[in-house]
Length: 290
Length: 184
Image 1 (tube, rainbow over the protein chains, first blue to last red):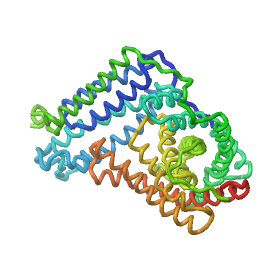
Image 2 (image 1 turned 90 degrees about the vertical axis):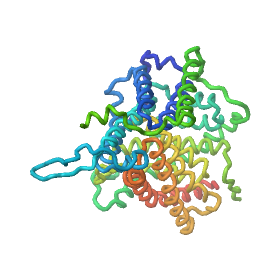
Image 3 (image 1 turned 90 degrees about the horizontal axis):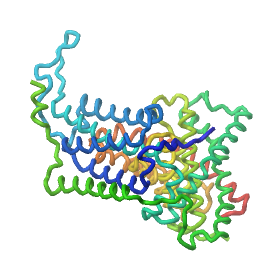
Image 4 (image 1 turned 120 degrees about the horizontal axis):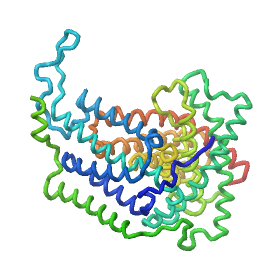
């Protein structure tokens, strides 16, 4: 089994932004987007997300897998829960509202009276902007951020050194553990271990994972003792760490952080001080359903 | 002589165990994504969730939390799914809650220890997936029905089944290697 990271250097504007500034901006966006259901605010945020996503210069082919996951989630939330059953609109969209088909719809000779309201359609659009915007920020990360930078980035963002180093170490362990997993799987298959065509109930099927899971896990635990001893001998944790991956802020990173603060603080002020965060349907949208 | 177990200790050994746990979770989640359990249909089964649970029980709640939290981040990065902080947090709790029994367990193959671990696996799955699912109300604007039927149950049920079946097997295997290698 080959395990590979999706990151590659593209020479895109995103490649030149410091990972710390990117994380700060991404979380600021998350705070802003989740603080409001105001469609105008969500539209502005969605626009920012589209611009941000385009800076990564990723292709559809590369990001297809992540988007498939998001599209399934969006489909469940918007089509099924908001439009068909109305469940997802609960709590945000007020009860009642203008029906899309007040006289019902005739389908195969039968008169159906769907409860879909104009308000719920507008809420679905708002959900699309909110989830779509957040997804654009966070799907981009594996494709445009070097995995070697994670440890240094989180350490410089204030995470304790030991925690940041754990992340760094985990990234470095992945290729060797993937290799061990492959070897174990081959060895078990050589002993006629069947993984692909198991008969029996669910518990039996899960139990079949054990001959793979247990040797790989126990081997990893046994080898970790040597690694911990080697780290102790080199005085791990005695002083503040330095990192091989160097991070340097440029003027545009400071500008991005300032913009991130503006986006998050601006949204919170509009929502909590000016009370503009509530969900409302613009009059022009009602008029479309005369 | 048995070393006294400290619940919140995070020294060099714990750093390595947490990193190994996170890497294992990422690799196994990635691998089982590709294998696909037969007959599971569209339901996503991730047997790898037992790694944070077991690492919590064997090495403490912080190790369990990091194995789940960082492991899920890395698994999603490897699979190209992006970064979903609230689900990463839920996976962290999946390891942290079973880890709370870490000081109570001396013999990993004793029936009482396994029973206690199973109980905390169910509790951990409920809290972890509950927190992650509830966060969808805040992030996506989903209501309680959506959260329960579209988020919580499809993640909680497979996690519990995987945990109940595989955690005891890992505990028995761990008891064997600790005895054989004279570790405590």
